[in-house]
Image: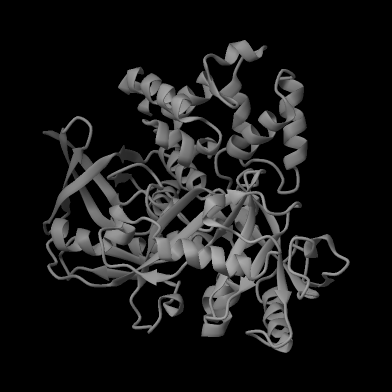
Amino acid sequence: MVVQGLYDIFVIGGGINGCGIARDAAGRGYSVALAEMNDFASGTSSGSTKLIHGGLRYLEYYEFRLVREALMEREVLWAMAPHIIWPLRFVLPFQKGGIRPAWLIRLGLFIYDHLGGRKLLPATATLDLRRDPAGRPLKPLFGKAFEYSDGWVDDARMVVLNARDAADRGARIFNRSRVVSARRTAECWSIDIQDRESGTVTTVRARMLVNAAGPWVDKVLSEAVGNKGAHNVRLVQGSHIVVRKKFDGTRAYFFQNPDNRIIFAIPYERDFTLIGTTDRDYTGDPRDVRITPEEINYLCSAASEYFAEPIRSDDIVWSYSAVRPLYDDGASKAQEATRDYVLKVEGNTGEAPLLNVFGGKLTTYRRLAEHAVEKIGEKIGVKGTRWTARSNLPGGDFAPTDYAAEVRRLKEHYPFLNERHAERLVRSYGTRAHDLLGSATTIADLGRHFGHDLYECEVRWLMIQEWARTSEDVLWRRTKLGLRLSQEEAKNLEEYMAAVPAKLAG
């Protein structure tokens, strides 16, 4: 057993909320440690629809505070990370006699345009689908549409970049490390963490414990902390399918379904279309969540109501599913349960405090982290002030509209890169793509080629800088090159990574 010193804060959970809290707190001067039992973003945070959005449909449930906060965050996050976040226009086809009347949609979009301090994102427009290219892939019965703005995000990369920045600011990161117990004393928490690869148990102490375990937040309370029978979250399964590209252009679609639910169809990784999400209650172990045949049928049928060319299960090249830990507000339907976050502090006077994090969404993670750190300050003393709104995530230190200029700059420094390779590197690493490529002057300098445009230097960078340990970490979370590499190529990558010394794990 290894015993380490006393931290101000210990965070359980390496999803977007846990990593966001660790980053904010470390940046204010708190000493921070964080443990994630698997890989960063291996649960809910990589299973989203990958949107930075206000949540247009939440207006129907009168979630005005949440929608306003989310709308205000869109451009804040875009400026923080313009490499992994970018604007996206959504086309909402309208059919007379449809689910929602035109006046209600117009009202909702008017509120959407004016509630959140939009500055750079363009306003809502009305489209004639008989003339606009957006109408070409749709059935001819859709003659009109509304178009509005939101944003796209590489969700898993946003998580790992928060973890990287937290570590750069002094946080101690325990990846693939499970909290097996957390014992409260009058002065602090004593937390036992087991490394899942070596089996080594490390004990750390912290003045305050933050439970940001997502779908496992109640399990942590019951099993690690000892609050038996804890029930605070409602687990809702959301599944997505990825098919070969169904339409050209960079705009996405917002489809309204007869059951009052909505799905998106989004351009994905250049050559694909992402369709989702579903909303259904989930009662199993979050580790075992998989898309069901019923969900596949639902997504294919719902999209086929709009697209002239039907979506069939044979079109699917990949699917993913995750469990959202929504705060249990007693809503009757999964899609009606609040997406807002709830922060609850436990601990009597003289006891080391515990902060539990329930719910939340990608778009509001930074504000959740701010509020969480303020609650931490109330309990163990204030350090620093709010700082993240004007910060950059690693690699994001360029203007929101300068992505194309960054690609040109990278190609000027490394002319052996083809256009698509340079674009992907800037989309993933931003200005740090230069650090990744280092002194390379030819493509051969990038080392072993694993397939598509993945080379050894990038893999080693991900192992050293971003805690990647397996091919799945690289191909499905740090990148989406799993869509490109063959099974044999993925196997070769796995064997290479297994042979690299563990000290490269970051």
